[in-house]
Length: 184
Image (cartoon, rainbow, N blue to C red):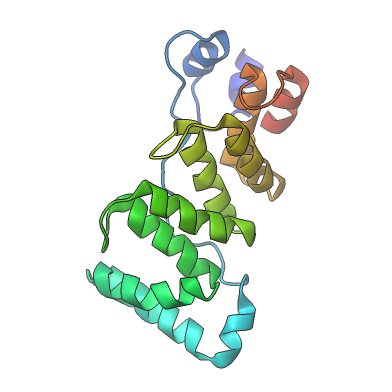
């Protein structure tokens, strides 16, 4: 167990033992939702107009200055046009109820659009929504799907969570070798 605990991030050996044995409730997998976007390299076709980065940045500035409603107004048309960072941030706004009424279903819809474009944090957050059944039907299979995509892209928390799913046989077939592989 000591070896396993040293390979897993960020859980204690006791929580790991309880989770693997099925005792108690599952440990918290991670904070949700993840903070802002990692990169604006996805969706660059829209930036050729020169307006998207400026509009997106204006939304970030409005948000950071305490005007989330203005940020949402700026990001919504970008998100509807397929700009991945705006989609992700709208998901955050809906998940937190910042600038819009809290609505996890709307958050999941925006995150799914961003996740389909390869946004790792959106994939991760979507996995959390499905594993927890927050506002939508709990679906461990879809959680595993989205966490696999994020894990393959190198997201450590998704790799850990996917390992936990394999260790429990939740949403995937029980496979301790796969679990350990994802934890290493």
